[in-house]
Image (cartoon, rainbow, N blue to C red; front, side):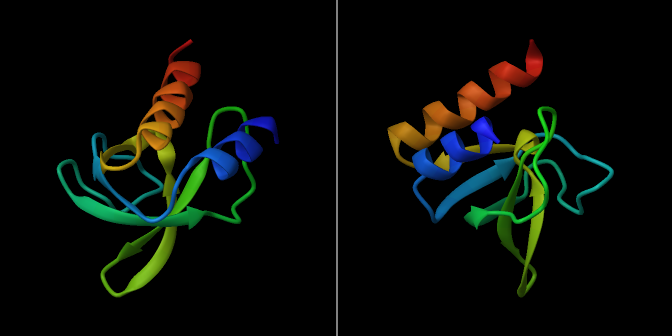
Amino acid sequence: MGWYAYLDDTLEFPFEACCITEREESPLEVGETVRIVGMSPTEPTLNQMFVTVEWTDRELGVPLKQLKPDDASCDTDQAIADWHYWLER
């Protein structure tokens, strides 16, 4: 829950992000841009954190791991970079 709280407190919603990798649990494709509107209520784990995105006229939760911010604040960029770094360890 520490990561969830950190991300929820630090990310400045909404912002645009680009899909950088495809995931089985997500319909997003590499290069697709989405608008992130908040943290997803999906149960977080140490390996998976979900955010809510606007996608084809609806909202759904996708893994934060597959997204890179395009148009976000410095704090948001840093928080997502921190999450990606954590996952790569």
